[in-house]
Length: 340
Image (cartoon, rainbow, N blue to C red; front, side, top):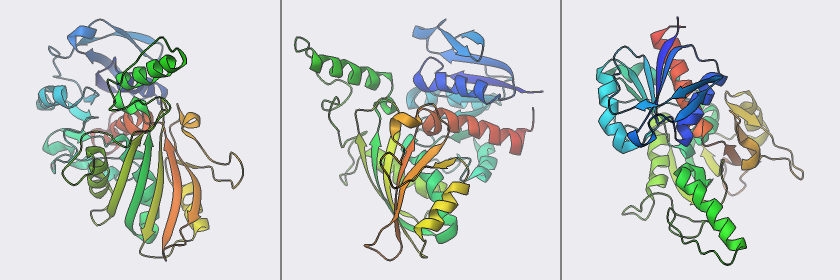
């Protein structure tokens, strides 16, 4: 006996990935529904070897369905997630709407699977921000060994993190640069993204940080440990898929780089590729389509007593969004629902 599963936002980048990953990982599905807005009604999407026609999110009845994976943004989530939850369907939400709600678990299954047990307060579980998800997978095993005091992270985030519009803008701008007769002004981003980097993701806050940077701080504290200090600089780069992060940690106890490398090799969800030679590291283009969070460039930080540096790369549409949501569903099934 399997689950009745709903994917809301099934025509978007993340929604399509959710369907792909449910099929790839052979999640025990008895019945599946693909939902979209009315403008996408009837659009066909793939689920394994099956083709599904999207149904109307606005009129869908969630009664009798077990799990709903939401990839529709905060606005529609605010309207439809409570309806699904009230109908007895557990919502796993990819938007930022519920991440900071104390009654809603924020879960990365390799890090805090036990948090899933708190879903019943609102029948909703939150998926973290894409940049946070890959980072905490790497932080947790090191924190368990030496207790991390402080994290300094700079991100290099692909345009797919801003949706299809971001992908289209990079593509169109790149073409226009090679074709002088075309003029393509920025629409999605604040400045030209082609052949450029933009140190600005989401809105600015009063302290000068952006909301994306604030998210990494708040979510790391909620998922890993509220005592960890985090400072982040988030940058959009002209890469289609795959987020990269340069991470520096300071620990309470000394942690040798070789031991850290061994710890990370044994940690769930991580692949260490760290050779001190040309090409002995992972770049975003190599992580696309993969489940793992890749760690490279592990080395001691000699400027402080207990410091380490490393490079972290992951497919943001997978671990940063769709894969983590499906892993939450798997964890929910094993720990709570126990079907399939």
